Every structure is written in C-alpha cells, then in structure tokens.
Length: 67
Image 1 (tube, rainbow, N blue to C red):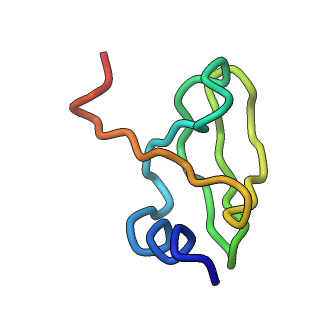
Image 2: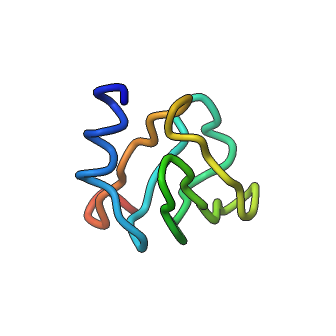
C-alpha cells in the first residue's frame, strides 16, 4: 500500500470535505463512503463520483476554509 493511501485512510472519513487535486472545476466534495481504496465523493459541480485512492490523493478542506 502506498504511503499516501495510508495517510488518506488515517485522515479522511465520511462526512469530510475534500477537493480533487487535478479537477478544481468539480468544486468541493463531501465524502459519502470509504471502502478499501474506493472513496465515494459528492462534488458540487460533478455529482457523485468514485475515486480510487491508489490514483488520487484528495485534499482535505477544513470548514474554516470555506466561504
């Protein structure tokens, strides 16, 4: 398991807000579920998407950072 996956698994959990690092147009997303390396995120402008944590390190967004 890659180091970034271990870090994400330890830091992220359902309900957290995230951004996709290469898809800023998707807006902020909320994690709906996490099963293994699969993370389901509901993004503002892209809807519900399945993210593979082997390929993408989602960036956590703190509520304090939101407008």
